[in-house]
Length: 248
Image 1: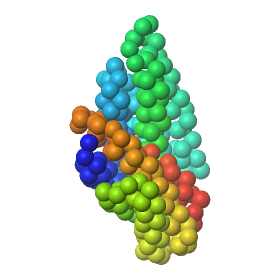
Image 2 (image 1 turned 180 degrees about the horizontal axis):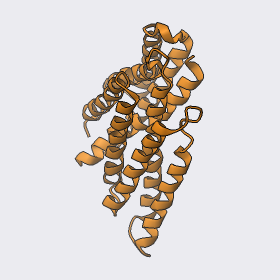
Image 3 (image 1 turned 90 degrees about the vertical axis):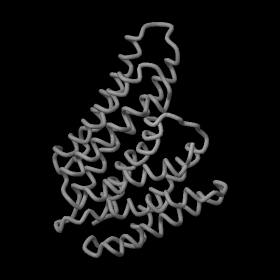
Image 4 (image 1 turned 90 degrees about the horizontal axis):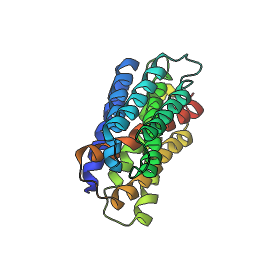
């Protein structure tokens, strides 16, 4: 599978979130919900497991539901409903496997893989929660800083060199991009070290996903889209918690 195609799709998904964050929380919620739906529908195709439509619908519903919950959750507990939605999604996956009956093929792979898909989908709601942490001036500093590191790491991931070279380079570039993005957010008053840490963490996830992309041969469009969008969705909760801890 071409690495550049996955990187381009992931970058487009990320830029859409950043752009929506400068519009409104509602825009982020709707856009992220659509992103998690894409992850949910495509994830069973990525795994190439049976019952793709049913399990894809469960994953998509869990992701969209988590985004809606983060939108309407109390300001003091933005992700308070995430565990419950994740648990409901996992329970639904087990129910599907039970209804398939005994002796079905790829039951273990389907169960474990789609449980992971549920977790990735619901973590996308972190982008909504992170946008709700915006300062009084409406500047989504946490999203901008985290996204800067992720975006630069996606570019570094395209360098045709071994992982032992590209991985540390990508993390370092992500840290630098995060620090620079922090300097461009004077209203947020984020320290350079905090911004660099946010950029480095996001970049590290992208570098790990690069190894996965290079090790698999995904030919379906839905599977490729899910592989590109899944890490971006999952990083939503990472960015939220980092922003909550490090952005004043």
